[in-house]
Length: 180
Image 1: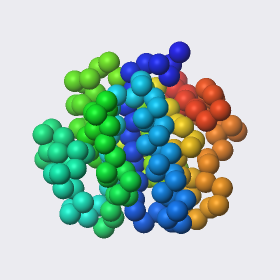
Image 2: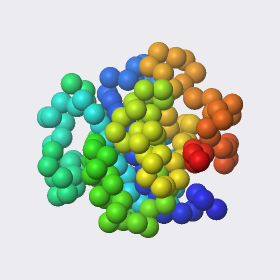
Image 3: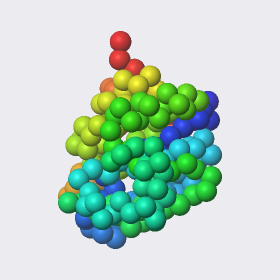
């Protein structure tokens, strides 16, 4: 099954400023739980854009590993920034060319789970978003529990059942259909 293939998760713009905070905290906890409970996800990429440089401290696993690989007005949510799982390699990457280099050196990765906020903007249009990752030759997977749909909506689960670009794999998981 596709979900058992070696995978990475990309966490896009998991900002502290996401409101309401109690729902955002549950959302971020869900992301961590989904990653923890998926043994196929062996790499977790933090792709936080527009962040305050003070949050990129070397004492956080994300940036300690990023500074080993790459030179490099929001704040990443504390739940995400403090997430640590010794079974997963964690690294901060924000540039597509750095992700391409990482994948070239880790060709065993077949799936990319894209998670974060928000569905119609950053999750699609950031350098490591769906639109660019779709061209990497990997399966692009979306767990709807791990994508914040819109900043101000009560029902924050994207409706992919009626989206012709995605094929449903299970209750919460969808795969981007390949073009061409």
